[in-house]
Image 1 (cartoon, rainbow, N blue to C red):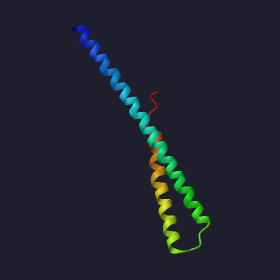
Image 2: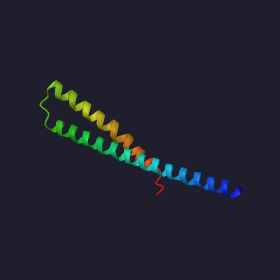
Image 3: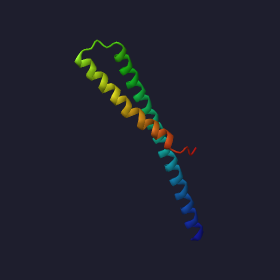
Image 4: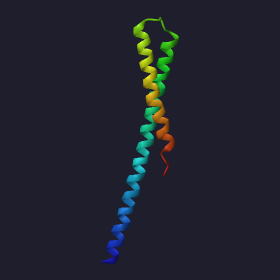
Length: 87
């Protein structure tokens, strides 16, 4: 009976460690995706800024893409940086 409970405890620890590692990898992947999406939005906003004609609609789009880029980029970098690598 004692061997069974020890084996069960070890199995639970292995499963918990595996799930924790998987969760950390998912966080890193999600952080990388957010970062890349933010970079893409910021590059598009920069391209719009360089080709700006001064129309109100284009200025609104420029501000929108720049804000979205920052909203995605900053949390993405933060998520990648703060997630521990447990590989």
